[in-house]
Image (cartoon, rainbow, N blue to C red; front, side, top):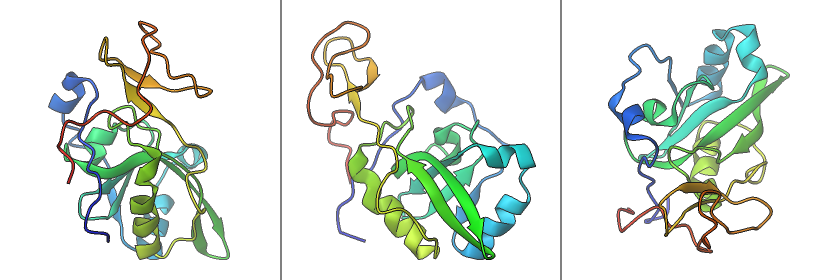
Length: 175
């Protein structure tokens, strides 16, 4: 792993951070066998939706059901990446079919992809070359709202203020 990776802290609603999901079924993805076993225990309907994932500060991918909050999947800790992920099976192998950085709780930048790629490679999973869907998050400097940038329009959805070109959710808490 490179010596520096941005660590994303939770930036979502504070009330979610205070709640703990004690019954959350989370798996740390370490191998094909681990992910296949975890997927086998899912309700069939659950397999039709992407799963919540985070990459922990030590570089491992953790998974939870989609309706789970990223902050709970991460145990409230900082992460190297967060988003949603889908899997497909072929010839008794699991592969990643789709992966995004969609997490409004951590608002990770698309540059978090290398951490995801390394975690998937470590587990021996075939994967796409990058996020199949990238989300650009920015905090509004005027009203502090979390925003998703659509169609390269860097304007706040709440107050119409200009959003910065660079990711701006951290004040030096990187690393």
